[in-house]
Length: 452
Image (cartoon, rainbow, N blue to C red; front, side, top):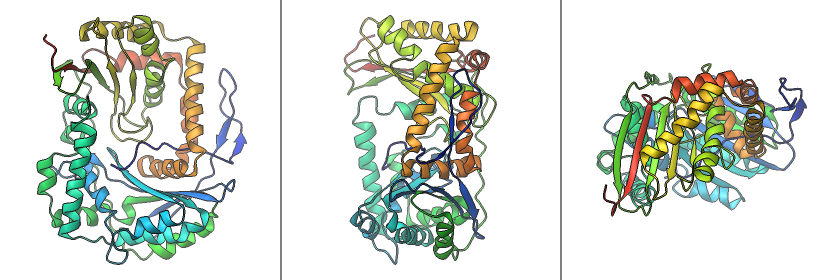
């Protein structure tokens, strides 16, 4: 996986009146123009002429949840294969063209999508589109390229998971919390499954999921929408269309019995606690309240968990958490986990921490939150959201993901309205419904020398 999470947002957009709130905050309208080619490729453009730069995101609607059974980590492996060259543009050409012109390129694999991104001077638009279309048509499927990337991915797993203290927590929590294979399996990949992948698997994966109808091209920056649509037709329009692959049913009921696990981490120097709750599905009534509640509970040094358990009772050394461990609160399908991960002090243990955490949650579920606390939380979320969208690359990525996951790129302008619309009663309901002990998964990481 090449990249950390990219959310997305805005620059040079028109100021318009937003929905009423306690502080009458204004909102910004991100320019969005959309066109779908005859082969099914959807192109989303957001013009912003503040700087002579652009951001491009090519999002394919396939991620860890859609990879074949028995091929864990395959979506991630294929992400790497996309940088191995094509019969026309051999290995290294893609990077040299973009980086040689002052740009950058990267990619990442998430639960529900894989994205490929570029940031470059606006003059580089046409060669980048040619390169993206070229690797959508065909890749250089050679045994050597496959073997190289199998080893690269395995080394990435060693560095990022196996040789990091607590490096597997974001894999351990879903495995324990979910029941369906699509939601619970190791999306980074087992070495055995990665080694079993062959060229036929790679070719089948490309022909099934890397098709125009299963892709969204997002572009933001110093471009003209009409020119972008014309270039997209020129370079992508001749690629044959195919039917979209079916999406899996990711729905699961909330858990009815708490899951408690203890793991020993040989690299850890202090114990840690990972906690997760199944949350509402994207786009449902409780989704936006769950996102606001996650921010209020775990969103930084002003959050309730930090103030209550790090600064207050001094049980934790830190407090990290949020809605959706592998992305943001708006770019997932199915039901995410609201997760908390914290290192804890020698004077604490899992039971003491969970009791204190339950008290914080219960206070919200029964008493709610003050208008001032809710307003502060919303302000921070909106500030973070808009700050991301100032960057053309982040905005292009957000637009492509909105189109791919929500089916509507203009959803990017509705997210602030969803945040503003959350009420104290919504937070009470969501806390009482989802943040319960039966719906909770807990993993207690002990240091190797600890004796319990």
